[in-house]
Amino acid sequence: MAMPSFAEFIRANKAEIVDEWKRRSREAGQAQKLEDVQLVDHIPFLLDRLAELSDSFVEAEAKGVVVPEHANEPRMPEPREHARQRVVEGFDLSDVVGEYALLRECILDLWEKAHGEASARTSTRPLNRALDHAVAESVDHYVTLRNRALRAMDDVAAAAFACASPDELFKRLLQVFTETMPAVQTCAILIRDGDFVRVRAAVGLEEELTRNFAMRVGEGFAGTIAATGQPMLLREASTDPLVKSPVIRTRKIKALYGVPMRHELKGVIGVAHMGSLTADDFSHEDKDLFQSMVSRAALAIEYLLARHAAERAVASRDDILAVVSHDLRNPLSNVRVSIGLLRSILAPAARTEGVEKALGSIDRAATRMTRLVTDLLDIGAIEARTLRVEIRPEVAAEIVKDAIDAHVEIALERGVKLSAEVASGIPPLRVDRERISQALTNLLSNAIKFSHPGGEVVVGCSVEGAYARFFVRDAGTGIGESERRHVFDRYFQGQQSDKRGRGLGLAIVKGIVEAHGGSVGVASELGKGSTFWFRVPLASPDG
Image 1: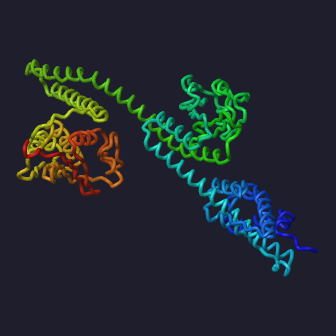
Image 2 (image 1 turned 30 degrees about the horizontal axis):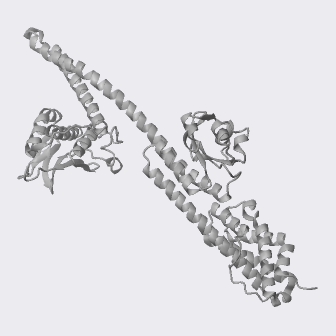
Image 3 (image 1 turned 90 degrees about the vertical axis):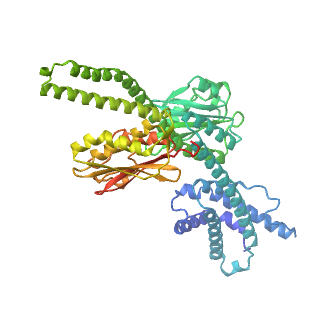
Protein backbone atom coordinates (compact mmCIF):
# COMPACT_ATOMS: atom_id res chain seq x y z
CA MET A 1 0.00 0.00 0.00
CA ALA A 2 1.31 3.44 -0.90
CA MET A 3 2.59 5.68 1.84
CA PRO A 4 0.06 8.50 2.52
CA SER A 5 1.13 12.10 2.33
CA PHE A 6 1.41 14.22 5.46
CA ALA A 7 -1.76 16.00 4.45
CA GLU A 8 -3.67 12.72 4.16
CA PHE A 9 -2.21 11.53 7.47
CA ILE A 10 -3.22 14.71 9.27
CA ARG A 11 -6.80 14.55 7.97
CA ALA A 12 -7.16 10.87 8.83
CA ASN A 13 -5.66 11.14 12.33
CA LYS A 14 -6.86 14.59 13.33
CA ALA A 15 -8.58 13.49 16.54
CA GLU A 16 -5.57 11.49 17.72
CA ILE A 17 -3.20 14.40 16.96
CA VAL A 18 -5.42 16.81 18.93
CA ASP A 19 -5.61 14.44 21.92
CA GLU A 20 -1.84 13.90 21.96
CA TRP A 21 -1.16 17.62 21.60
CA LYS A 22 -3.59 18.39 24.43
CA ARG A 23 -1.91 15.84 26.71
CA ARG A 24 1.59 17.15 26.03
CA SER A 25 0.45 20.76 26.39
CA ARG A 26 -0.91 19.98 29.83
CA GLU A 27 2.34 18.26 30.81
CA ALA A 28 4.43 21.14 29.50
CA GLY A 29 2.49 23.52 31.75
CA GLN A 30 1.84 26.09 29.01
CA ALA A 31 -1.91 25.53 29.06
CA GLN A 32 -2.73 24.33 32.56
CA LYS A 33 -4.88 27.37 33.23
CA LEU A 34 -7.12 26.77 30.20
CA GLU A 35 -10.29 24.74 29.89
CA ASP A 36 -10.30 22.08 27.17
CA VAL A 37 -12.56 24.20 24.95
CA GLN A 38 -10.18 27.16 25.15
CA LEU A 39 -7.15 24.97 24.55
CA VAL A 40 -8.20 22.80 21.60
CA ASP A 41 -11.48 24.07 20.16
CA HIS A 42 -9.81 25.70 17.14
CA ILE A 43 -6.94 23.20 16.69
CA PRO A 44 -8.85 20.86 14.29
CA PHE A 45 -9.36 23.80 11.91
CA LEU A 46 -5.68 24.69 12.21
CA LEU A 47 -4.77 21.10 11.29
CA ASP A 48 -7.03 21.30 8.22
CA ARG A 49 -5.15 24.43 7.15
CA LEU A 50 -1.77 22.73 7.67
CA ALA A 51 -2.88 19.77 5.55
CA GLU A 52 -4.01 22.13 2.80
CA LEU A 53 -0.70 24.01 2.87
CA SER A 54 1.28 20.77 2.87
CA ASP A 55 -0.57 19.58 -0.24
CA SER A 56 0.11 22.88 -2.01
CA PHE A 57 3.85 22.61 -1.36
CA VAL A 58 3.95 19.00 -2.59
CA GLU A 59 2.19 20.02 -5.79
CA ALA A 60 4.52 22.98 -6.30
CA GLU A 61 7.62 20.83 -5.87
CA ALA A 62 6.24 18.19 -8.27
CA LYS A 63 5.80 20.88 -10.93
CA GLY A 64 9.26 22.28 -10.23
CA VAL A 65 7.77 25.57 -9.16
CA VAL A 66 9.84 27.55 -6.67
CA VAL A 67 7.55 28.94 -3.99
CA PRO A 68 9.40 31.48 -1.84
CA GLU A 69 8.73 31.10 1.86
CA HIS A 70 5.68 33.16 3.01
CA ALA A 71 5.29 34.77 -0.48
CA ASN A 72 1.95 35.23 -2.20
CA GLU A 73 0.12 33.51 0.64
CA PRO A 74 -3.31 34.87 1.60
CA ARG A 75 -3.88 35.67 5.23
CA MET A 76 -4.83 32.45 6.99
CA PRO A 77 -7.68 32.80 9.50
CA GLU A 78 -6.80 29.69 11.54
CA PRO A 79 -3.30 30.76 12.69
CA ARG A 80 -4.61 34.26 13.24
CA GLU A 81 -7.45 32.93 15.38
CA HIS A 82 -4.94 30.87 17.39
CA ALA A 83 -2.88 34.02 18.00
CA ARG A 84 -5.96 36.05 18.97
CA GLN A 85 -7.11 33.51 21.53
CA ARG A 86 -3.67 33.28 23.07
CA VAL A 87 -3.39 37.09 23.36
CA VAL A 88 -6.74 37.14 25.18
CA GLU A 89 -5.62 34.28 27.44
CA GLY A 90 -2.39 36.09 28.36
CA PHE A 91 0.12 33.78 26.67
CA ASP A 92 3.62 35.05 25.95
CA LEU A 93 4.82 34.94 22.35
CA SER A 94 7.31 32.18 23.26
CA ASP A 95 4.38 30.08 24.50
CA VAL A 96 2.57 30.50 21.17
CA VAL A 97 5.65 29.43 19.17
CA GLY A 98 6.17 26.58 21.62
CA GLU A 99 2.68 25.27 20.90
CA TYR A 100 3.52 24.96 17.20
CA ALA A 101 6.77 23.16 18.03
CA LEU A 102 4.79 20.73 20.18
CA LEU A 103 2.27 20.23 17.38
CA ARG A 104 5.12 19.40 14.97
CA GLU A 105 6.48 16.82 17.42
CA CYS A 106 3.06 15.20 17.88
CA ILE A 107 2.49 14.84 14.14
CA LEU A 108 5.97 13.41 13.47
CA ASP A 109 5.89 11.02 16.46
CA LEU A 110 2.48 9.65 15.45
CA TRP A 111 3.69 9.42 11.84
CA GLU A 112 6.73 7.33 12.88
CA LYS A 113 4.57 5.16 15.14
CA ALA A 114 2.19 4.44 12.27
CA HIS A 115 4.76 3.80 9.54
CA GLY A 116 7.91 2.61 11.30
CA GLU A 117 11.15 2.61 9.32
CA ALA A 118 9.38 3.60 6.10
CA SER A 119 8.60 6.99 7.66
CA ALA A 120 12.29 7.92 7.54
CA ARG A 121 12.22 7.80 3.73
CA THR A 122 9.48 10.46 3.53
CA SER A 123 10.56 14.07 3.30
CA THR A 124 9.22 16.26 6.10
CA ARG A 125 9.81 19.39 4.03
CA PRO A 126 6.12 19.98 3.06
CA LEU A 127 5.01 19.65 6.70
CA ASN A 128 7.80 21.89 7.97
CA ARG A 129 7.05 24.56 5.38
CA ALA A 130 3.34 24.45 6.22
CA LEU A 131 4.08 24.82 9.92
CA ASP A 132 6.59 27.61 9.26
CA HIS A 133 3.93 29.52 7.34
CA ALA A 134 1.42 29.06 10.15
CA VAL A 135 3.96 30.12 12.79
CA ALA A 136 4.86 33.24 10.82
CA GLU A 137 1.21 34.17 10.42
CA SER A 138 0.50 33.56 14.11
CA VAL A 139 3.52 35.54 15.30
CA ASP A 140 2.72 38.46 13.02
CA HIS A 141 -0.88 38.61 14.20
CA TYR A 142 0.10 38.13 17.85
CA VAL A 143 2.53 41.03 17.72
CA THR A 144 0.00 43.24 15.93
CA LEU A 145 -2.74 42.51 18.47
CA ARG A 146 -0.40 42.78 21.43
CA ASN A 147 0.96 46.14 20.33
CA ARG A 148 -2.52 47.42 19.63
CA ALA A 149 -3.69 46.31 23.07
CA LEU A 150 -0.68 47.88 24.80
CA ARG A 151 -1.24 51.19 23.01
CA ALA A 152 -4.91 51.09 23.97
CA MET A 153 -4.09 50.34 27.61
CA ASP A 154 -1.58 53.20 27.63
CA ASP A 155 -4.24 55.52 26.21
CA VAL A 156 -6.73 54.46 28.87
CA ALA A 157 -4.14 54.96 31.62
CA ALA A 158 -3.18 58.38 30.23
CA ALA A 159 -6.84 59.40 30.17
CA ALA A 160 -7.26 58.30 33.78
CA PHE A 161 -4.27 60.34 34.97
CA ALA A 162 -5.17 63.43 32.91
CA CYS A 163 -8.82 63.77 33.99
CA ALA A 164 -9.87 65.54 37.16
CA SER A 165 -13.58 64.61 37.13
CA PRO A 166 -15.63 61.52 36.22
CA ASP A 167 -17.49 63.28 33.39
CA GLU A 168 -14.21 64.44 31.85
CA LEU A 169 -12.88 60.87 32.07
CA PHE A 170 -16.01 59.41 30.45
CA LYS A 171 -15.66 61.70 27.44
CA ARG A 172 -11.95 60.98 27.09
CA LEU A 173 -12.50 57.21 27.31
CA LEU A 174 -15.08 57.30 24.53
CA GLN A 175 -12.61 59.24 22.42
CA VAL A 176 -9.98 56.55 23.08
CA PHE A 177 -12.43 53.74 22.23
CA THR A 178 -13.55 55.24 18.92
CA GLU A 179 -10.04 56.27 17.85
CA THR A 180 -8.66 52.80 18.61
CA MET A 181 -11.42 50.90 16.74
CA PRO A 182 -12.41 52.55 13.44
CA ALA A 183 -15.32 50.13 13.00
CA VAL A 184 -17.04 51.66 16.04
CA GLN A 185 -19.52 54.41 15.11
CA THR A 186 -21.43 54.79 18.38
CA CYS A 187 -20.30 54.34 21.96
CA ALA A 188 -21.78 54.97 25.39
CA ILE A 189 -20.91 54.60 29.05
CA LEU A 190 -23.67 53.98 31.60
CA ILE A 191 -22.92 54.08 35.34
CA ARG A 192 -24.94 52.28 37.97
CA ASP A 193 -27.08 54.60 40.08
CA GLY A 194 -28.99 52.54 42.62
CA ASP A 195 -31.37 50.25 40.70
CA PHE A 196 -30.64 51.94 37.38
CA VAL A 197 -27.79 52.33 34.91
CA ARG A 198 -27.66 55.89 33.60
CA VAL A 199 -25.94 57.29 30.49
CA ARG A 200 -23.01 59.51 31.52
CA ALA A 201 -21.26 59.91 28.15
CA ALA A 202 -22.08 59.08 24.54
CA VAL A 203 -20.66 59.39 21.02
CA GLY A 204 -23.14 59.08 18.16
CA LEU A 205 -25.90 58.77 20.76
CA GLU A 206 -25.68 62.23 22.30
CA GLU A 207 -29.46 62.51 22.61
CA GLU A 208 -29.37 59.77 25.23
CA LEU A 209 -27.15 62.03 27.31
CA THR A 210 -29.37 65.09 26.93
CA ARG A 211 -32.41 63.00 27.83
CA ASN A 212 -30.62 61.58 30.89
CA PHE A 213 -31.51 58.11 29.60
CA ALA A 214 -31.55 55.39 32.26
CA MET A 215 -32.55 51.75 32.34
CA ARG A 216 -33.53 49.65 35.35
CA VAL A 217 -31.04 46.89 36.18
CA GLY A 218 -32.38 43.64 34.71
CA GLU A 219 -34.34 45.37 31.95
CA GLY A 220 -33.37 46.28 28.40
CA PHE A 221 -29.98 45.80 26.78
CA ALA A 222 -27.76 47.68 29.25
CA GLY A 223 -29.84 46.65 32.26
CA THR A 224 -29.55 42.97 31.36
CA ILE A 225 -25.76 43.23 31.02
CA ALA A 226 -25.59 44.98 34.40
CA ALA A 227 -27.69 42.22 36.01
CA THR A 228 -25.92 39.22 34.44
CA GLY A 229 -22.39 40.64 34.35
CA GLN A 230 -21.92 39.07 30.90
CA PRO A 231 -21.09 40.63 27.49
CA MET A 232 -23.88 40.70 24.90
CA LEU A 233 -24.08 41.14 21.13
CA LEU A 234 -27.15 42.18 19.16
CA ARG A 235 -26.92 41.92 15.37
CA GLU A 236 -29.97 44.06 14.58
CA ALA A 237 -30.17 46.36 17.56
CA SER A 238 -32.59 48.89 16.09
CA THR A 239 -35.31 46.23 15.78
CA ASP A 240 -34.40 44.00 18.73
CA PRO A 241 -37.13 43.99 21.43
CA LEU A 242 -34.45 44.08 24.14
CA VAL A 243 -33.44 47.60 23.09
CA LYS A 244 -35.49 50.29 24.83
CA SER A 245 -33.49 53.33 23.73
CA PRO A 246 -35.41 55.35 21.14
CA VAL A 247 -32.12 56.89 19.98
CA ILE A 248 -30.62 53.50 19.09
CA ARG A 249 -33.81 52.61 17.20
CA THR A 250 -33.97 55.94 15.37
CA ARG A 251 -30.32 55.75 14.29
CA LYS A 252 -30.95 52.23 12.91
CA ILE A 253 -27.94 50.74 14.65
CA LYS A 254 -27.13 47.19 13.56
CA ALA A 255 -24.37 45.58 15.63
CA LEU A 256 -24.46 46.55 19.31
CA TYR A 257 -21.90 45.00 21.66
CA GLY A 258 -22.00 45.70 25.39
CA VAL A 259 -19.76 44.65 28.28
CA PRO A 260 -20.02 45.09 32.05
CA MET A 261 -17.72 47.39 33.98
CA ARG A 262 -16.52 45.43 36.98
CA HIS A 263 -15.00 46.43 40.30
CA GLU A 264 -13.35 43.63 42.27
CA LEU A 265 -15.20 44.57 45.47
CA LYS A 266 -18.39 46.28 44.25
CA GLY A 267 -19.16 44.02 41.30
CA VAL A 268 -20.74 45.62 38.21
CA ILE A 269 -20.52 49.42 38.44
CA GLY A 270 -21.69 50.18 34.92
CA VAL A 271 -21.97 49.14 31.27
CA ALA A 272 -20.18 50.25 28.11
CA HIS A 273 -21.44 49.48 24.62
CA MET A 274 -20.28 50.12 21.06
CA GLY A 275 -22.35 50.09 17.90
CA SER A 276 -22.11 49.98 14.09
CA LEU A 277 -24.48 51.50 11.55
CA THR A 278 -23.37 49.15 8.76
CA ALA A 279 -22.06 45.83 10.13
CA ASP A 280 -24.05 43.21 12.04
CA ASP A 281 -21.03 42.10 14.07
CA PHE A 282 -17.59 43.24 15.19
CA SER A 283 -14.37 41.31 14.69
CA HIS A 284 -13.19 39.06 17.50
CA GLU A 285 -10.19 41.37 17.83
CA ASP A 286 -12.33 44.48 18.32
CA LYS A 287 -14.56 42.76 20.87
CA ASP A 288 -11.58 41.44 22.83
CA LEU A 289 -9.90 44.83 22.81
CA PHE A 290 -13.08 46.66 23.83
CA GLN A 291 -13.56 44.30 26.75
CA SER A 292 -9.94 44.74 27.88
CA MET A 293 -10.13 48.53 27.61
CA VAL A 294 -13.40 48.69 29.53
CA SER A 295 -11.95 46.44 32.23
CA ARG A 296 -8.96 48.75 32.63
CA ALA A 297 -11.16 51.86 32.49
CA ALA A 298 -13.44 50.53 35.25
CA LEU A 299 -10.63 50.87 37.80
CA ALA A 300 -10.07 54.52 36.92
CA ILE A 301 -13.80 55.25 36.83
CA GLU A 302 -14.43 53.79 40.26
CA TYR A 303 -11.48 55.70 41.71
CA LEU A 304 -12.66 59.03 40.27
CA LEU A 305 -16.28 58.42 41.27
CA ALA A 306 -15.22 57.66 44.85
CA ARG A 307 -12.89 60.67 44.96
CA HIS A 308 -15.56 62.95 43.50
CA ALA A 309 -18.12 61.74 46.07
CA ALA A 310 -15.61 62.34 48.88
CA GLU A 311 -14.84 65.82 47.57
CA ARG A 312 -18.54 66.67 47.44
CA ALA A 313 -19.00 65.42 50.99
CA VAL A 314 -16.01 67.45 52.22
CA ALA A 315 -17.24 70.55 50.36
CA SER A 316 -20.70 70.16 51.87
CA ARG A 317 -19.26 69.75 55.35
CA ASP A 318 -16.99 72.75 54.90
CA ASP A 319 -19.89 74.88 53.70
CA ILE A 320 -21.85 73.99 56.83
CA LEU A 321 -18.85 74.66 59.06
CA ALA A 322 -18.26 78.03 57.41
CA VAL A 323 -21.88 79.08 57.93
CA VAL A 324 -21.92 77.89 61.52
CA SER A 325 -18.56 79.53 62.23
CA HIS A 326 -19.67 82.88 60.87
CA ASP A 327 -22.95 82.70 62.79
CA LEU A 328 -21.10 81.90 66.05
CA ARG A 329 -18.53 84.66 65.87
CA ASN A 330 -20.79 87.56 66.88
CA PRO A 331 -22.51 85.77 69.80
CA LEU A 332 -19.13 84.69 71.17
CA SER A 333 -17.78 88.21 70.88
CA ASN A 334 -20.84 89.47 72.76
CA VAL A 335 -20.26 86.90 75.51
CA ARG A 336 -16.65 88.00 76.02
CA VAL A 337 -17.57 91.70 75.97
CA SER A 338 -20.36 91.02 78.47
CA ILE A 339 -17.94 89.25 80.83
CA GLY A 340 -15.63 92.25 80.76
CA LEU A 341 -18.56 94.56 81.35
CA LEU A 342 -19.78 92.50 84.31
CA ARG A 343 -16.36 92.58 85.90
CA SER A 344 -16.21 96.37 85.54
CA ILE A 345 -19.63 97.12 86.99
CA LEU A 346 -19.79 94.57 89.78
CA ALA A 347 -19.30 96.07 93.21
CA PRO A 348 -16.26 94.76 95.09
CA ALA A 349 -18.50 93.09 97.63
CA ALA A 350 -20.31 91.19 94.86
CA ARG A 351 -17.10 89.89 93.27
CA THR A 352 -16.82 86.84 95.48
CA GLU A 353 -14.51 83.92 94.77
CA GLY A 354 -17.45 81.93 93.39
CA VAL A 355 -18.47 84.74 91.02
CA GLU A 356 -14.91 85.22 89.77
CA LYS A 357 -14.57 81.48 89.22
CA ALA A 358 -17.80 81.38 87.22
CA LEU A 359 -16.84 84.42 85.12
CA GLY A 360 -13.40 82.95 84.49
CA SER A 361 -14.91 79.63 83.40
CA ILE A 362 -17.29 81.39 80.99
CA ASP A 363 -14.44 83.52 79.63
CA ARG A 364 -12.19 80.50 79.03
CA ALA A 365 -14.98 78.58 77.32
CA ALA A 366 -15.77 81.56 75.08
CA THR A 367 -12.06 81.92 74.27
CA ARG A 368 -11.79 78.24 73.32
CA MET A 369 -14.91 78.49 71.16
CA THR A 370 -13.59 81.62 69.47
CA ARG A 371 -10.31 79.83 68.75
CA LEU A 372 -12.18 76.86 67.30
CA VAL A 373 -14.31 79.11 65.09
CA THR A 374 -11.18 80.94 63.90
CA ASP A 375 -9.49 77.61 63.16
CA LEU A 376 -12.48 76.39 61.16
CA LEU A 377 -12.53 79.58 59.10
CA ASP A 378 -8.76 79.42 58.57
CA ILE A 379 -8.77 75.78 57.45
CA GLY A 380 -11.60 76.57 55.06
CA ALA A 381 -9.61 79.44 53.57
CA ILE A 382 -6.50 77.23 53.32
CA GLU A 383 -8.40 74.47 51.51
CA ALA A 384 -9.98 77.01 49.16
CA ARG A 385 -6.57 78.67 48.63
CA THR A 386 -8.00 82.02 49.73
CA LEU A 387 -5.96 82.52 52.90
CA ARG A 388 -4.75 86.13 52.89
CA VAL A 389 -1.18 86.93 53.89
CA GLU A 390 0.21 90.47 54.01
CA ILE A 391 3.94 90.17 53.37
CA ARG A 392 6.37 92.68 54.84
CA PRO A 393 9.86 92.59 56.41
CA GLU A 394 9.82 91.28 59.99
CA VAL A 395 12.39 90.39 62.69
CA ALA A 396 12.65 86.71 63.67
CA ALA A 397 13.76 87.35 67.26
CA GLU A 398 10.68 89.50 67.93
CA ILE A 399 8.33 86.78 66.64
CA VAL A 400 10.00 84.20 68.91
CA LYS A 401 9.86 86.56 71.93
CA ASP A 402 6.16 87.33 71.36
CA ALA A 403 5.32 83.63 71.21
CA ILE A 404 7.17 82.84 74.43
CA ASP A 405 5.70 85.86 76.27
CA ALA A 406 2.19 84.77 75.30
CA HIS A 407 2.76 81.31 76.85
CA VAL A 408 4.67 82.10 80.03
CA GLU A 409 1.61 81.83 82.27
CA ILE A 410 0.36 78.48 80.94
CA ALA A 411 3.90 77.06 80.96
CA LEU A 412 4.24 78.00 84.65
CA GLU A 413 0.91 76.33 85.41
CA ARG A 414 2.14 73.08 83.81
CA GLY A 415 5.63 73.27 85.31
CA VAL A 416 7.33 73.57 81.92
CA LYS A 417 10.38 75.77 81.33
CA LEU A 418 10.46 77.96 78.20
CA SER A 419 13.67 79.14 76.56
CA ALA A 420 14.70 80.84 73.31
CA GLU A 421 17.47 79.79 70.95
CA VAL A 422 17.71 82.43 68.20
CA ALA A 423 20.82 82.68 66.03
CA SER A 424 22.43 86.10 65.76
CA GLY A 425 22.42 88.11 62.56
CA ILE A 426 19.27 86.66 61.00
CA PRO A 427 18.24 88.95 58.11
CA PRO A 428 14.67 90.30 57.97
CA LEU A 429 11.96 87.85 56.95
CA ARG A 430 9.34 88.21 54.18
CA VAL A 431 6.26 87.17 56.15
CA ASP A 432 2.86 88.09 57.48
CA ARG A 433 3.82 88.54 61.13
CA GLU A 434 0.37 87.78 62.51
CA ARG A 435 0.08 84.56 60.52
CA ILE A 436 3.60 83.32 61.30
CA SER A 437 3.04 84.13 64.99
CA GLN A 438 -0.16 82.06 64.75
CA ALA A 439 1.79 79.12 63.28
CA LEU A 440 4.52 79.33 65.93
CA THR A 441 1.90 79.66 68.68
CA ASN A 442 0.16 76.47 67.49
CA LEU A 443 3.43 74.54 67.68
CA LEU A 444 4.35 76.00 71.06
CA SER A 445 0.90 75.31 72.56
CA ASN A 446 1.18 71.67 71.49
CA ALA A 447 4.70 71.33 72.90
CA ILE A 448 3.67 72.71 76.30
CA LYS A 449 0.52 70.59 76.38
CA PHE A 450 2.37 67.35 75.72
CA SER A 451 5.48 68.02 77.85
CA HIS A 452 6.03 66.41 81.22
CA PRO A 453 6.18 68.61 84.34
CA GLY A 454 9.77 69.76 84.83
CA GLY A 455 10.44 69.48 81.11
CA GLU A 456 11.77 72.19 78.82
CA VAL A 457 10.46 73.57 75.55
CA VAL A 458 12.87 75.46 73.31
CA VAL A 459 11.67 77.94 70.69
CA GLY A 460 14.24 79.09 68.17
CA CYS A 461 15.17 80.31 64.72
CA SER A 462 18.20 79.96 62.44
CA VAL A 463 19.17 80.60 58.83
CA GLU A 464 19.09 77.89 56.15
CA GLY A 465 20.12 79.30 52.80
CA ALA A 466 17.48 81.79 51.66
CA TYR A 467 15.12 80.74 54.46
CA ALA A 468 14.61 81.28 58.16
CA ARG A 469 13.97 78.03 60.04
CA PHE A 470 11.72 78.32 63.11
CA PHE A 471 11.52 75.33 65.45
CA VAL A 472 9.88 74.19 68.68
CA ARG A 473 11.67 71.37 70.52
CA ASP A 474 10.22 69.44 73.45
CA ALA A 475 11.17 66.38 75.53
CA GLY A 476 7.72 64.82 75.52
CA THR A 477 6.53 61.35 74.53
CA GLY A 478 7.52 61.63 70.87
CA ILE A 479 5.69 60.43 67.75
CA GLY A 480 5.91 57.06 65.99
CA GLU A 481 7.22 56.80 62.41
CA SER A 482 3.86 55.75 60.93
CA GLU A 483 2.15 58.82 62.43
CA ARG A 484 4.81 61.37 61.51
CA ARG A 485 3.73 61.19 57.86
CA HIS A 486 0.21 62.33 58.80
CA VAL A 487 0.55 64.78 61.71
CA PHE A 488 0.02 67.78 59.44
CA ASP A 489 -3.12 66.26 57.86
CA ARG A 490 -6.45 67.85 58.63
CA TYR A 491 -8.39 66.01 61.41
CA PHE A 492 -5.66 63.40 61.82
CA GLN A 493 -5.82 61.55 65.15
CA GLY A 494 -2.73 59.70 66.21
CA GLN A 495 -2.63 56.39 68.06
CA GLN A 496 -0.37 57.61 70.84
CA SER A 497 -2.02 58.37 74.15
CA ASP A 498 -1.33 62.10 73.88
CA LYS A 499 -3.18 62.31 70.51
CA ARG A 500 -0.71 64.81 69.10
CA GLY A 501 -2.05 66.31 65.85
CA ARG A 502 -5.64 65.53 66.75
CA GLY A 503 -7.21 68.87 65.78
CA LEU A 504 -6.72 71.50 63.12
CA GLY A 505 -3.70 73.26 64.58
CA LEU A 506 -0.94 71.49 62.66
CA ALA A 507 -2.90 71.55 59.39
CA ILE A 508 -3.25 75.31 59.84
CA VAL A 509 0.50 75.63 60.47
CA LYS A 510 1.17 73.81 57.21
CA GLY A 511 -1.33 75.95 55.30
CA ILE A 512 0.06 79.22 56.65
CA VAL A 513 3.67 78.29 55.93
CA GLU A 514 2.92 77.03 52.42
CA ALA A 515 1.04 80.26 51.71
CA HIS A 516 4.40 81.97 52.34
CA GLY A 517 6.21 79.61 49.94
CA GLY A 518 7.75 77.67 52.81
CA SER A 519 7.74 74.09 54.12
CA VAL A 520 7.08 72.24 57.37
CA GLY A 521 8.42 69.09 59.02
CA VAL A 522 8.92 67.13 62.19
CA ALA A 523 11.72 65.04 63.68
CA SER A 524 10.73 62.78 66.52
CA GLU A 525 11.59 59.62 68.42
CA LEU A 526 9.31 57.79 70.80
CA GLY A 527 10.20 58.53 74.40
CA LYS A 528 12.66 61.31 73.49
CA GLY A 529 10.47 64.18 72.31
CA SER A 530 9.84 66.01 69.05
CA THR A 531 11.07 68.98 67.06
CA PHE A 532 8.51 70.66 64.82
CA TRP A 533 9.90 73.17 62.33
CA PHE A 534 8.94 75.37 59.42
CA ARG A 535 10.92 77.44 56.92
CA VAL A 536 9.86 80.81 55.48
CA PRO A 537 11.70 83.07 53.00
CA LEU A 538 14.13 85.76 54.06
CA ALA A 539 13.68 89.24 52.62
CA SER A 540 15.86 90.04 49.61
CA PRO A 541 18.81 92.41 50.26
CA ASP A 542 17.08 95.25 48.39
CA GLY A 543 14.04 94.89 50.59
